[in-house]
Length: 475
Image 1 (tube, helix red, strand yellow):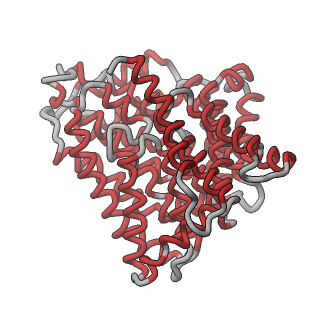
Image 2 (cartoon, helix red, strand yellow; image 1 turned 60 degrees about the vertical axis):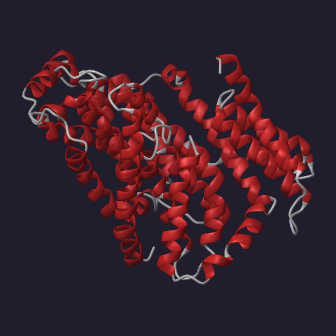
Image 3 (cartoon, helix red, strand yellow; image 1 turned 90 degrees about the vertical axis):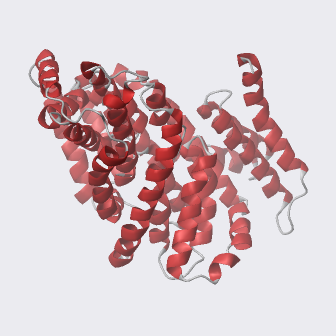
């Protein structure tokens, strides 16, 4: 299929999907406006997946159509208030502000310097290099809600220089050292994406959706504490596990620390701007962990961004010129609104009531495993964590909170924690995946095979450790 036909197909599929759903008579007990809104929602999610135009534009178009047609609210004034509600959502602005931290890491060079520090300290052996990559990602994760920017944009450009030092190139020599390094970087960023609320933008979207649907409030520290034992185990396990099941041919890499030292030397001494940014990052982390009784997490993020501008870590032109952040702002604001519409028209309640019965006869642990397992492995059908979160989380959460035994907050965490982990499943599962696939160091069949293996391991550890831990915490 040539490029032109592919573009046409990508544009037609969302419209076709929406029209097919709309043409089916609404199920018994569901109002016509709710069914028509669901058809529009299907079209939007399909469009986000096929992306004939930017996803943010698709979300905006969906909200406009819903507001103009009156399928959510008949009153024009109520419709416009609903349509713009996502732009007043505090979590959406937290995502935007956190993206601005990425600008600081890039502009100051602090992100690159942190990665090189770890490579210099741990990179003499290939296993140590795997942990150097892991700790580099861990250091950036709490302040980088885009794992694409964190791993694909910061970590990858550094580690791409390492394999050629040992004659490892895409193709026949990839397994010498390159394949191990690249796949470790991807697998680790999936773990760190679940460790921190601000480590992955869909985490924040999930928190916003559950807050809207059930008034469940999840703080940065609650999220971090609830995933802590699982995060530590998987973080420490991944580099060693891949070293055993996806081993590099070269086990010893004495030239890597020397190369990192040369790179650091070329960067020069740590600058005042880097130190300032480091101080602001520590301030944000401290307030997110200990200051939530006094200052909202979004206010903290915006405060730090303001201080970054005041202290000239970044310029105002950097802020208004960071297109990715503004694009994400529109994208998530409209998706939050679209997902909220499913709640407003009572579609989520109808679906939850229709499918909750099979879970009622199960004991609590079985229900948790089945529900979270379905939510996790259904990601094979999605090319976007954001689309997965928007389409499935409200429904799964609505079903979950009808199962007695644990709180709505615990259910929200149990489902939401899987969002980062499921990024390991396929070559399209999360933002950095296509980038690492495109590096040429990881074969397509390896992506699918080891994605399944790690996906099962991630989920097994999550169930075995995460469930008892959350029940013990009694959140």
